[in-house]
Length: 184
Image 1 (cartoon, helix red, strand yellow):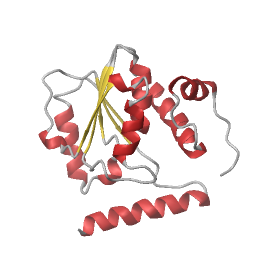
Image 2 (cartoon, rainbow, N blue to C red):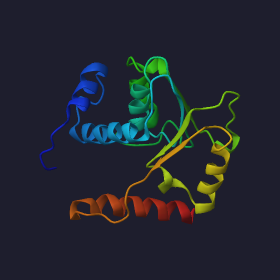
Image 3 (tube, rainbow, N blue to C red):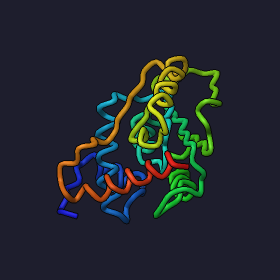
């Protein structure tokens, strides 16, 4: 990986929460997620639903932005045993032990079709998770359901056109995973 300069917001986050200290790749991802959450306009005190939370990379950025008076409900259809180098369960256990933990409520093996909440959310976030939908219609169905649960939807996804040859391996890995899921 080429040299990368962390900005002050990312350095401050790392110092305050003691997460992701041991991996530059994770820190680069964190910086991207912090910038993404800032662009979404998440404010202190917000109640946020995150769909497709995975290992919690975006979740921690949302929880930081929502502050101590805010909360994040993070759901993922995957099992806590899914993922590498850390499983979803391992990653989120580490996060829950941080000072962000009390703001977070993780739900794994949660099919959004069956998710209910009596209290509305200020915002719903889908961050880099649409790769995992089997059909575009499934994503549309989620958006329709979200309209009844949240005041605002924020969506981000990776660009399919990689700009650097070093990005090709990730693109191929994700494409292969998606093809494998479709054939099952």
